Length: 442
Image (cartoon, rainbow, N blue to C red):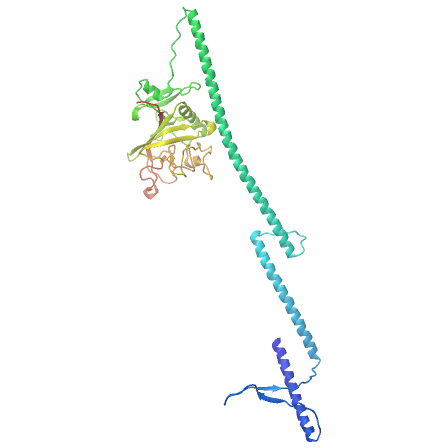
């Protein structure tokens, strides 16, 4: 459009120049004829000094003049003004579009949806401002809720610790109270017995009461040296039960808690099965968590684990302290003071540590694994962490196996960290878990 305008103006100037030349010629003719007219001649000259042979441009100095243009030029001027106004309007709209795009991109980073925009907002700027306020308000609410949840979690953990502590204190108080009452009753009965004996000389002598042994160590001390099944009573306030006693291994006097030797007993059991015990005391069995608790509660116990693989390698792991809490505390395990040759798999690492862990079964999840039940995954009951570095209640395999490591497992066994070729898992031929009082003297 500009080019067309320039061409029109150039053409007009040339026409005007032609008219000027014509006027000059007319003036010259009038001068010849004796007419006197005041004129300003047109001068042509170069605009600078030129060298020889150089084509130098000429400049023309025109006198002041007035040209009368056709009326169409007024319409052309009006059109140019309208074009300029239209151009300014287009630039303004373009800038508004760019600003709107920048605002949209900025808002999209904070919230991709427009659900927080009010329908009555008049302008994009007001919409953006309202949306920003709503987003800030929601962010503030989310932060307050997160803080409240964190505080609630801390309060729950504190209350759980206090409840557990109070429960332990209450249980101990109850036990001490019962013990004191039993002691008082025993004193009263003995006093009455003495009075009756002094006043009734013809009375028949009282029958001798046979004392029940607390564990296999008591039987060993009493002279029993044969392996076999014996009846014990760790706590007089509870009933007696049968156990298998190992009177020959490493000095004897061991009460066996678990034994694996042929796979004849299934250890994929429920919480109640592990609570009460299962299997055959002469072959494979789990003594029962309630019984293990009574045994470890009555005296300070040491633990001994004996392992043998199918290559004939035998090793053991011994712990100076072993204790299992009651069912209320989910049979929590306390074990430390390792020595032996099999390695301390119960304290394998910070991630895999079975000490102070609750007992878990396939139907009761008490482990620290957040995505599932270790007992269900490994088909056994055990003091799982998240999940294991040891599991002596796993499935009994008669040889190396592939797939999930759900068999009997001890993470520090020979070559276990190196892996087994072709993806095979290590299997164990026999396992024995047994306890004995720390005060036992051979």
